[in-house]
Length: 149
Image 1: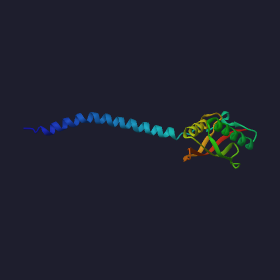
Image 2: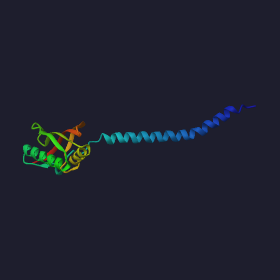
Image 3: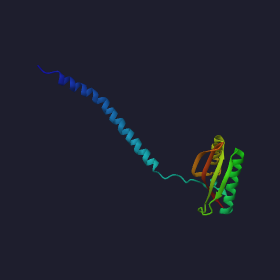
C-alpha cells in the first residue's frame, strides 16, 4: 500500500506553485519599474528659469528695485504687511536675492506666497518659514529671481 499523504502534499505544492510563479513575475515587473523611476529621477533637470521667465532689468541694482516693487505691490493687493524687505547686493550676477518678512492673516499670507510663486516672471522662495504672530502669521523667506539685461 502506497502512502497517500506524500502524494497529496506534492499535488498541493504543485497547485500553489502556479500563483507563486505569478507573484514572482509581478515582483520582477515592480522592481524593473522602480529601477526605471530611479534612472528617470537622476536625469538632469531642465533649467530653473528660461529667458522669458527672467525680470528685464538694466543692472543688478535695477533688478533689485523692480523685484522689490513687484513684491510690495503684490503684498498691498493681498492685504499683507511687509515688515522688512532687504536686498542682497552680493548675489550672483543673473540672480536677485531679497530677504522678506511679511505678516497678516493666514489666508492672506498664504495667498501672497502663492501669488509670488505662480506669477510671471517667476519669484521662488529658496527658504521660507511661517510662524504664528499676533493676529495671524509671519512669513520669513529668501526670495530668488533671475534677471536679464
